[in-house]
Image (spheres, rainbow, N blue to C red):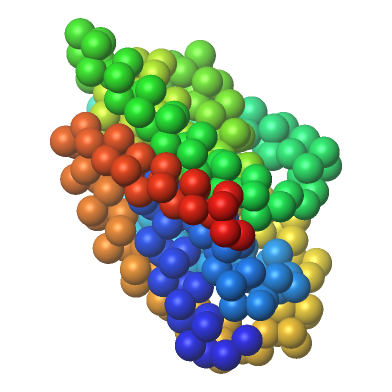
Length: 274
């Protein structure tokens, strides 16, 4: 793989990871077009780690508060100065929600990997169309709801439903961010929380995928090279941070269905010509 190809794949990952258009699906198509179908899966995971860093930096205040609350819970420490009991309760509820979401996603993700280890490009393109209809349906339902209550975290039931949606997003061509945000909106989570929670809940899922694929670390360095890997990751991080900032603005406006205008024709063209 050349450095230019790696940069292009990194840019595609950074753009598609946060915009609800499926990063895994676009990477699979790009790798096919570049003749790079034999790239180890861990390369994709590295690009996901780069965009994960963008998530951590973008939401660092929220993530830090959750980590502090989790540490206080584990080590039974008193509340820190400036933290109220209500805030601590909300943080613990948020942490529990992330754990529940991760467990449900993990079960589905493992099942998908075992039952559907390799899917064709045609399946990926069909997944684009499915994602488009998920976005359209969630927008239709959300606009007819009277308005979601402003809550600090999803309920247990909502967290499990979001985990189901995120698990569906592990299928190639199905957008993880799109299905997760749509799932949150469908079960009554307000738009602001839906966007934030979607990305924070992705952190353990992506880290888990990295741990599962870490055994192939040597294969990545030998088959790709350090320079292309670093170039791709830096590009994925930079483009990802900008894409995340853009998507959060789009979520607040309630315009996720806009992306269906791209996904439907892209999926149809892929089914016809790939």
